[in-house]
Length: 219
Image (cartoon, rainbow, N blue to C red; front, side, top):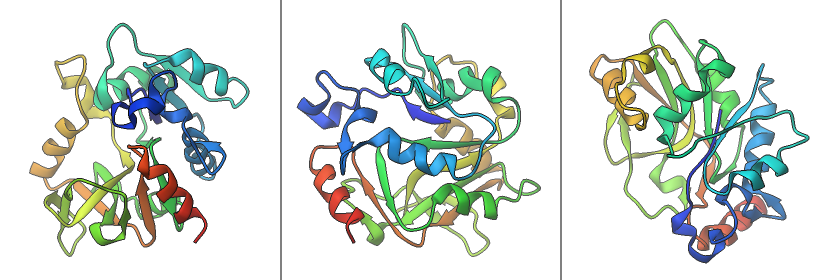
């Protein structure tokens, strides 16, 4: 699943009349960079959730085979958006990917697929050590124990790619909610794991991130 419903408010004037997934980095829309990585793992289906200026993204994806779901009238956040897409995605664990980052190094989705152990994991988050991030202006999200379990902490930034089981979604009473709700449940049960990313990662959530991402791609 590609998360593409956000307003992109940190992008300021760039998203006044353009949804953030269509902002260009190195001559290509952000969502196309993400779609390249998604296709490399040969998923059965790819879904993108949309909300802000959705018809522009629908038109952009028209010939790609990507299923689009427009969230209306309200945006459902990551948890609500994923649950809303389950009729298309099915009940198996889902790879979710944010569409506002550029990765330099191996395909993070492939790394997650290779490291996935469903017997002990309910979610596996690809995380970047803070010192390997580019353009990231917030603190870290997680810290990791030697066995790969993660908890809230300052050392690692969640990069926006994960594998997550979806069975817990049905029990959430809210219509719109963040996947943080599920992560906290999994963390409490020792079922939330992280995978350190060996390359670099750039947050393209604000205008300055575009040039930083382009420089990263040229390395």
